[in-house]
Image (tube, rainbow, N blue to C red):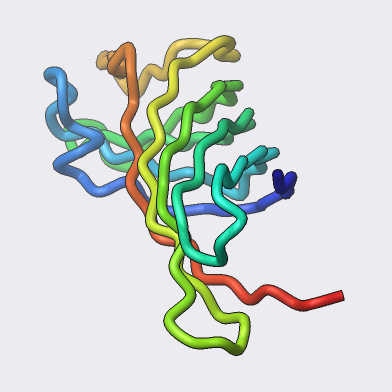
Length: 137
C-alpha cells in the first residue's frame, strides 16, 4: 500500500467542462491538493493498482457570454481509482495510467458567472498517467 500527497492544477478541456449543457463555460483547477491511497495486490513490480483519494479542489469558472467575469468555488470530492503500474526498465522509472471516478461531497457554493449557473455532472471521470521513480531504501 502506498499513501501520497499531491498538489496539481490544470485547465479542464472545454469539451469536458461543457458537458451537460454548460455551453460557453471554461473551468480551471487552481492549485489544489489530494491524498491518495493505492494498493498493489501483486508483489511484482508491474501490476494492478486500486484505491482512492480525497481531493480538495479550488475551481475558477468563466463564460464566453460574460467577458471579464468569473466565479471561484472550492469542493471536496472522494475518488475511486483503478490503474496499472508499469516499469519499462529495471532502474526505478514507472508509468501509472489510471482512471478515477469521483462525486462532490461538499461545495462552497454554486458557480455563477453573469446570469449563468454551472451545472456539474453528478459523477466526474478522470483519466491520467503518473510518471514516477521508485527508490530502493
